[in-house]
Structure formats: C-alpha cells, structure tokens
Amino acid sequence: MSDYTLEVKDLTKKFNSQIAVNNVSLSIRKNSVYGLLGPNGAGKSTLLKMITGMMKPTSGYIYIEDHLWTRQDLRNIGALIEHPTIYPNLTARENLNVACTIYGLPKTRIEEVLQIIGLQHSAKKKVKNFSMGMKQRLGLGIAIIHNPKLLILDEPTNGLDPIGIEELRALITALPSKGITVILSSHILSEVAQVADEIGIISDGVIGYSGKVDPDLDLEKLFMEIVARNRGVNEC
Image (cartoon, rainbow, N blue to C red; front, side, top):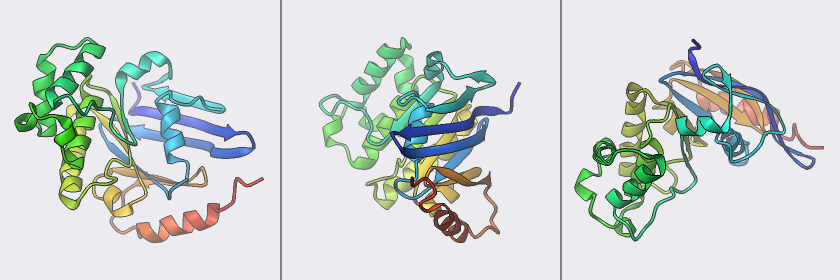
C-alpha cells in the first residue's frame, strides 16, 4: 500500500493558449499537512479544482491511494475553496444536518463535528450572526463531516482576524491525527510554515520546489527566486 494519499503526475491545464498549470507532479503523504505556496494567479486554485473534479485536466493523471482518480473518490475528499457553502438563515447544527442528509450519515456525527470545530456552544445560533472565523470553522466542519481521507483548503484564512487565524491553525494541525491528509493553499508564507510538514512552491503554473519544511531554509528567499525564475514562462 502506498504511503501517499494523493499523487499527481504531469498534470496540465490550458485555457485556449494560456497554460494555467504546467506539467505538475506532486506526492502528498498520508496523515500530513502539505502547504501549497504561490503568489496570486500562480495556478494554486486551478490545481486544487482539478483534484476536486471541479475542472477537467487537459492532460496528466491524478491518483488517490494507488488508483486513478474517479468521481467515486469525491466521497473521500473534502474541500473548502474560496467561501464556505453555508445557509445563513440556518443554525450551525441545521447546516451540519443538511450535510449529514446529503452523505447519508447518522445525526450523531453532527455533535462530533461541533466538538471538533469548537462550535458546540453556538450550535443554535443562526449563521448570519456568526463572525468570519466562525463561518470558516463551520465550513471546515461541513468539509470533514464525512470523514474524508483528503481535505483541501484554499486560502482558508482570507478575511480572518489574528484570533480567527490562530483558531483555524489549531484545527488544521489536529486533523492528521484523525486520519485526514490536508492540502493547505496560501500566498502567506508564515501561515503555511507554521502548520505544514512539507511544502510545494508554485509560480506561473510550475512547481519550483517540493519538500520538507526545513527550519534552516530561507523560505522567503526561495519563494522569491522561484517566482522570478518562472515569471512569464508560460507566455506564448
């Protein structure tokens, strides 16, 4: 059995003559947090949307635990991309109940997830009255309610204050111990460095570095070097 939850090989996405993701290969270890770093427009969201089936690759392959990706694998993938899909006029518990119904899960899972995301004391409160951080935590709860093997988070701290960021960071680092592999996408280097076991740096659709987080590594310098090296590489 593979040590990896996800492997992508030679993955490419083109929009007409524009190459958004260029021949990317990655291997994400089981029960780890993988940080995907890159400036805005680097191809991070496009890569993640292909993994979640929201976009079809132009070429290349995606493997989930040794087999080629199929739509059946969506039952083992959770995602929080851009803004959480939640109903503002429903309570936190009611939103989770909707997700349980969709996945055919027992209602006991609602209380379990409320404990994990720290909203057990706000379960009866309507989401329209939630702070941004609480909404993000609820979105994360919906994404993990079906116990996915892989969780994809695209810029999850956008719009959060320092307290919200710290709370979300604590939640993310606890997930691998629950059997969930996490891909965390961000353009904020310090945010990813604090939680990731391994990182990948993408710029102009090209992976310039992939490996373990080394405390002796000047991440900012490496990031800027890769951005400068890849600038305009996909221009026709």
